[in-house]
Length: 342
Image (cartoon, rainbow, N blue to C red; front, side, top):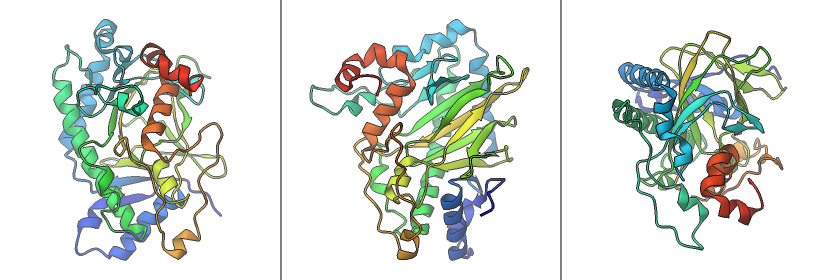
């Protein structure tokens, strides 16, 4: 079978347009999600002004003096929120050449008792920079829009898989564990140092990405090659997460992807959003129509990255593995209990 060289495009406005050939739209979305696991989404309705604002705010934050950025360093947060320095987050065992702010839902930390699930410790407040007070409002408005678009794509996917549109809704109430990153990729430090982010999969349901005009995101093909997810004006990039792979027994596949560092003299900015359910969500397999079930490929069996049906446990594993400095400061008891960084 010929391997794709570009990501498919899905106009999500067709999902809510009564004049759309619904079967044709759902078939196109289903093929994009099954065959590649990554696609562009247009027709989303997010104002261009807000998309410009969030990238401008990102540039403004990363232009602050280092000491102002470090005021909200993530080692101050038991919930892994705040600023991560270049080279201190790890993917696929290697240090990523990027700096970022991690942002989740604005909630108070819980009073967690012995015996409670470890994932409850992920609930808590964000950190915001005093030098850029407008960042909070811009990011939370963008987060709300990204959540709206992601939920619509998920509802369309449910329909495309032969389910009721609201099949997944129970896990996406006010306690959903959504997550935003504001990311800066500096120029690579050497010609052979290309890991902006190492190859990985996302462990939620869906991820949605706004990228600037620079590019660098690459999507793994089944033959081992890479598709360049070149920036498309007015489009988000959306990809399938591991929770949907589990739910569909591999009919939808979470696809490996990476970011290649920019060339010298070039900076890249991006804002990814991760659609996670409630932390207590446990994924149950869908009853797919027979013609789809026959094309299910089974859940990936990777001993280095076991896929867990319990979302909260998957989230804890991911955070502990990616941010060892935060884990060592705030989660040492959990690391000891688990016998290491996993």
